[in-house]
Structure formats: structure tokens, C-alpha cells
Length: 374
Image (cartoon, rainbow, N blue to C red; front, side, top):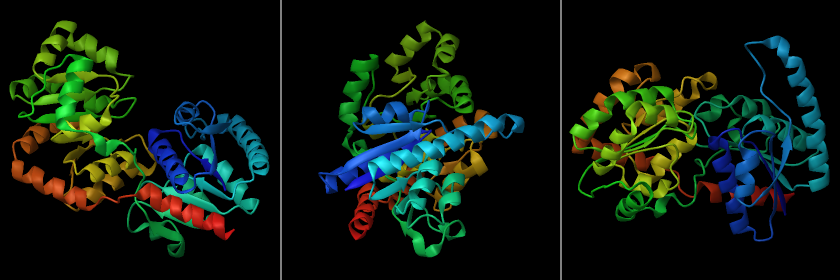
């Protein structure tokens, strides 16, 4: 069978796409899989790293601030549709899977017009623009949240949850202590509480500002910290803190890093996680049963991260701090939670209950079923 998978732009689209591809390979050893992405976006690098072929389209998002610049965007969309038609015609997929993002719109629209069954995977509690536009073309729509009937035809929806990175559950606290010592020369202890901050691969300015101001207070409280600043902010934060202080912090179990190469162990040692409220991040936190403070990004379409976070907050499975209030509220809330073992235990129990396990395999099973039926 041949499977076309399209989407990307962010890790929130790419991680589920690769997880679905891996699950298809597990269930169908002879599967032939081709990705379609947007040129210049991170999928063009990450997908080949995962061992899959990818074709790039010149598709881009519309410029809402400067509408007169959209003539070239429309031209690139026209080119992308023509290229997608050639890709679909040459590859001859049995099923096309769209996970959202610019490229997904072009590839899935063309596939549907050419009679290829289309499966959509929607990560968020508030549906993305691309998937909403494709809802009539899809045979099946896999969602992560209940109540998605307000966006999609009820008869097409199946609740599968979001696929996550497959190795996340392999970490351990003991291994994490060794890894942090080896990679960062940092001294962590098993009997101390650890706060993990992950603002995304590029980082989050407000979270980083709150952490820069609050780090001395966390150190004084004996809280261990693993802080992923994101590559955009890392050098500025290091310059602000100073090399001498950064070295001293390592002896107190405080690591400041641009990027975390070992997420399984970072999650394993964390007692509390501070994170954006992207769909993939939330799915990981649910799967691992991690107490968390969610700070929705204000820079996403239709404020969908707030919708994602509120689905957990309503179940007493997470705490929400608004981005605009993070500089004042984040540190006090983190210290309050770390000092309340009972509250942390309740949050862990409630978030674990929301986990959708084997999401990638469930989606892959439905995709294969459609391929065989065709």
C-alpha cells in the first residue's frame, strides 16, 4: 500500500505525522510512505531525519497585515496545486493523510479531487483553518478532543487522541540524574523537587522573562530546574545571567539550555512542568501524567492554545496562567504547587485519566482499513 502524509510548519504537526508513519510501518511492513511539506519549513529537515522521503511545495500563509503582498502568495498556491497534482499522479497513494499546515491544504485538496480517500488528523480543541476547509473532502477525521462536532460532520469523527513521540515513556529519574551530570555537569538529587520549563524549540519570551527574574528565588527554595530557553533566546539569557552564576547554578541542580536532547529523562525527573499549550505538548503531559502549568501562546490562530488548556483546567488536570500575566503569576503559582503535595497528586491523577493511548496505532489502523477497502 502507498500512503501520502502531508502537513507541518511546527513540531505540533510534524511529531504526529511521523508517529503515524511509524505506526503504518509497524502494521504494514511493506508500506510505501511519501511526505509532502512546505519548502523552507522544519518538516523538510525533520522528516528525512526520521527516515522518510519528502517533497516540498512553495506554499505559504496569507499576509493578513499587508494584503497587497498576497499576489505572490496566490501564485505560489497555484504552483503548489500543480506540483501536488503531479506528486499524487506519480506516487498513486491508496490513502492521503493530512495533519494540518499549509502544504496539507494543497495536497489533500488535490488527492480528494483525484478520488483518493482523505483522512484528517486534528490536534487541537479548536480546529485549524486548513482542516476546517478540508472537512467536506475527508472520509474520516481523527480528533483529540470531545465536542468537535461544532467544526466537523459528526459521522466522520473518531476520537483517537494525538500521536506523540514514541520513546517518551522510556525515561527514569535515576537515568536523568546521570544524564544531567554527563551532559551539563550539573548536580541533581533524587530527593529534591524539579521544575521543568519547555517553551518550545524557539522559546517563549514571557516564560523566559519570568524565569530570568525568578531563578534566584527557586534556587533559594532548593528547587531544581531544567530550563529550555529555546535557541532564539538562549544567548541573551546566558549573557544576562553571566557565566559565573550559570556555573554556580549547576551545583545547585539548575540547568539552562537552548534545547533538550533527552525529553524522556527530562520529563521523568520533573515534579512540575511549565509549558505552552500546544496540542502535542498537552498529549505528552497527559500520557506521562505530569502536573503542569500551561501558558497558552497569544500568537496562534483563533487562540486555540487557550481552548486546549481549558479542556484540562475544567477537569482540574492543569493550572492556566495567561501569557500577559506570566511575569507576575508564573513563579508564585509554581512555588505554591511545588509546596502542595496533595494538589500535585490530584493533578497527576486527573491528567493521566485524559490520556489517549496508542493514538498513532489507532489512526494507522483506520488508514489501512480505508486503503484495503479501496
